[in-house]
Length: 310
Image 1 (cartoon, rainbow, N blue to C red):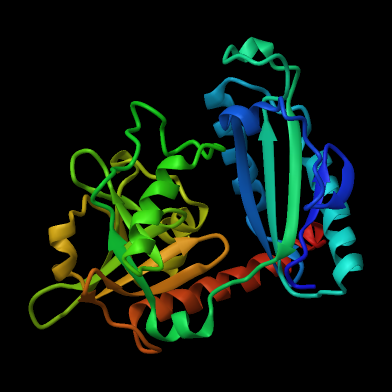
Image 2: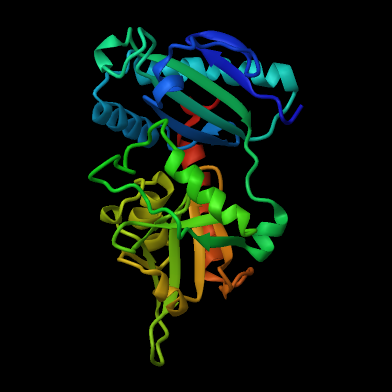
């Protein structure tokens, strides 16, 4: 039952295929919601505190208050994960999605019509990276019909239930046969993919051939990814690599030897090409060394957080 999804709606455990929210819920009607995704490693929820802090920031940006404490919600996640294990007998690592909406109420855009926050937890097996993508890398394509939302309109830094921009851009890339999309902002700067941050690797000219890793800055209009932040602040430096933020444009792709995706569910995933521009992939690449360094970091995290075991 690998495709089974266990749900928890406001404390009620059920098969996710069963209806559980009011048709008047503002998350359903208007995308008036925030969410976070965690995954487990060896049954330990990874980066719990970092994701929860971002959830609170997103809710504050939308102007509503979370009704529960992180301890209470972790307890609900533990209940949901246990129900998933019972229903499936699956012992693999888990994908955990928590969505919190402003609630239900009378139809109308006025936030004051909402009756209070509501939550849904979804738990399933974490699918990870297919073996063929790990070997050959993902294929990306640049969105040309639409651009990333401006941070002055609906800020991509808020992890909200409104994903129409991402969906439409990804649809364009998929119609060209790509796995994922590269979105640019209104200034033509590279932002991110539909659900992942981007990283690029290049070597400096000269005999030293020093490796530099760059990722688009937050001001280019991207989600402040947890994996991205860990790479910048801890993992890349510990692995001996310099990683920094820099504005990147599509015409700069030819300057880079490697490209990779960063996301909670995939950690570090290689990119093989963007619209015919091929990048190095394989065991000896910087990308795979970063992936190994990420795995080392995860092992240390799991060892010191037994309280987050499900």
